[in-house]
Length: 219
Picture 1 (cartoon, rainbow, N blue to C red):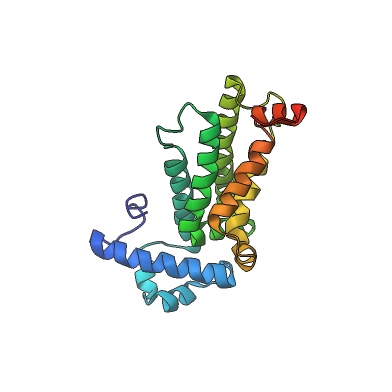
Picture 2: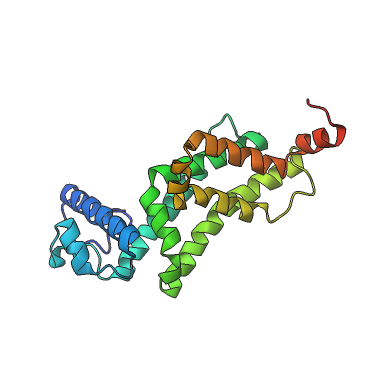
């Protein structure tokens, strides 16, 4: 984030700027996810972070800029992580699909406040920032769309797989971080959630499962 927004951040000492930026963003996410970004004032953020109002303006000039900084990191993380599958899944659409689901859920677990912010606050963003939030969701859908298309072409997925499936996968991924408390009450572990989503998605597209269902046999 520090490198990406060097044109906005005026602090010249990288180590100092990184420490302060970490404190500021952590406080902003905590406040936003607790009381809402719209309700959070920069004075609230100053108090929560321990950084003066003048100090805050050394990192961003408005709440809109702050939104852009956070959204840019969510999008960048999604692009960086999901676009780099291990060699063990490349060329294997089924393994790649399972990897995408697992990796996305685990990524949002690690960046829970960031993704919760992007999802919960999107409706309150200014139009341009709302568009960026939507673009970030479509970026994720694009990875699933591509692997499903590859799988159909290779015969791993059914030719009648719905083109809407990538869009339907996204809410399943979001449910883990948006409604985490629900799964915690039910003692659902992250591994259980991942495997359940993987099985559900495969039931909608896997060619082998279609054949098994028709013959009543297992391979």
